[in-house]
Image (cartoon, rainbow, N blue to C red; front, side):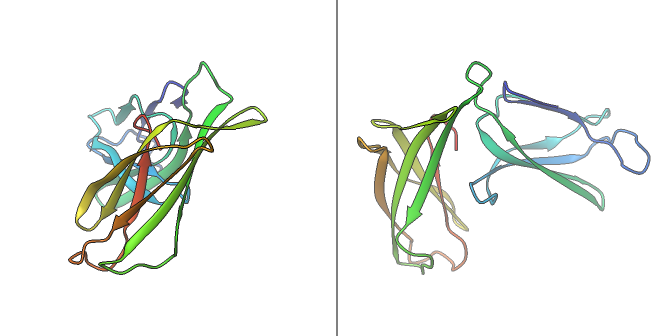
Length: 178
């Protein structure tokens, strides 16, 4: 069950027997707008009853991965921001100056923060956002930016020379969401 309060409650069940799975390892990932796993929100192990209770994970897309022995399962879902404004959603779009980068390159990025209530959209001017870079070196703070009157922010991230080639993701947060 997923609730608008940001609570996920469930019981991990063996699909063959229908019985709860005790001591099942779970990992809750935060997903970006492309449904890519960008950050572990939490992880743990179910009790003997197979129950998972996760609270205060709202306003985002998530993927729950389950593992018990050789058995694995997963599910992706969206948790809304709150119950008091069910039609209110915030969106963030992030753009970079090109698609491919190498260690030592600079990444120029622009972001747009806006909201929708029903069929009306509005830019979010004067809002503070924080940008992080996630790579094989871990996560590092890029900077904190304020959106302009058009809801736009921009900045630069320099990929370290000693960063292994591979995937570097930019993650943007505002009030610990996105």
